[in-house]
Image (cartoon, rainbow, N blue to C red; front, side, top):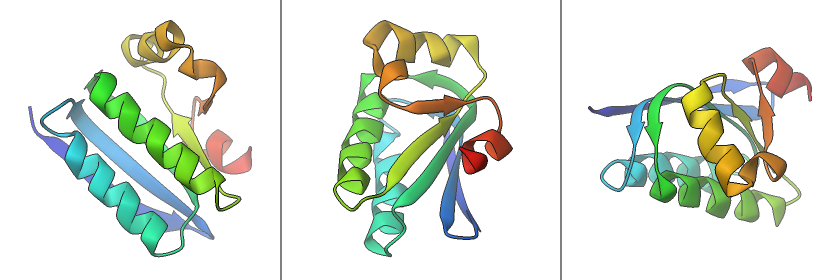
Length: 111
């Protein structure tokens, strides 16, 4: 399955919406989009994973790396996800305690 990554802006927050499978073959596309947003000075990020059907360790690595980068610039990275399958990956790895994970985009923006 292909990966679709789109970006929108809500005030000073960049929202990166991801659809499809994030794995070793597609993670570079997500990394490139997030890196571009950060390079443009957007260090408040919401990554919407609600339409992601698969997320592997490569995808998690992209998210963790970008979280560290934005935190070094006093920014943040929040996740939107309601998929039990994807949330399980965050719980198993303990990353549910590292990322702010929200059920809706509005919740993530308001947090």
